[in-house]
Length: 320
Image (cartoon, rainbow, N blue to C red; front, side, top):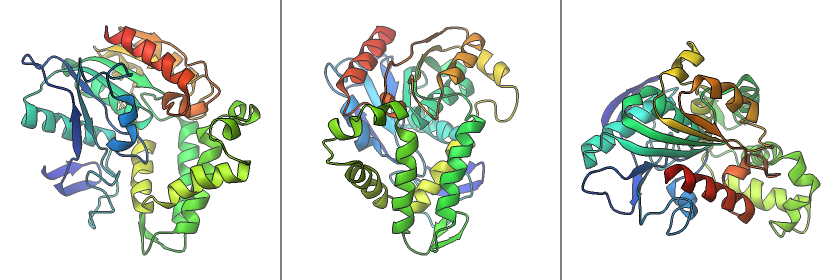
């Protein structure tokens, strides 16, 4: 995409990685944008796409752009001159440029997003209100809350105290021990107290013990990630704000899209109260709480058929 101006400077020789599912209609009116969330690429969220699933490619043309910093699109792992900050606004502007240039798309039927993807959906609606008909915000918010930023600052501090850390989220080598600790911290936030109390870490994941669950599902998973990429995405998430530091209510009132808010009942990052506070400022909006013990993972219920069924029902209803 050439050299892109971003919040932290210039993203040189920028590359946006993407994949599509389904067929674009002749009238270009069946586009669903499905951006990625923290620590994953498009392949990790494909489980949601398929005939009869939450996003049906027999009806919709689904486009999944990879977030800058996730290792597929331009990221610290493939760009030695990575700027200090790339924001959601930077991602959304690049995605819009890509859709127009590659497909001639100027209007989107829906932006569907989970977590960091949900925040991108909000940014689409706020930054380009004329271009978006609907958004579906699954476990996300228009502005990263102070409480959420406390969590993110803690994770960033863990990475920055690694012996391998050089400066500004760059590392001399992958800090494997630190990444494993990072995963254990994440396990206490990604899933709720109710989840652990009900023993779902054992039954749903077929783990023999809490220790095995933490090691296999969190330590080992994060140990395979790039620390620099994780750091970059934490910075993007921390800076998330559709109002860019200005009046949030005013920014929300400018949104024309119909908004479906799907917070998780026990999510520890994006609280139901965050969406409840946003609701009065939105012209067309509905809030449906996912009744789940799975915390933040209620919005990404790969191992959780009950929450997946709830999500599919709400999304189909909203898109019908």
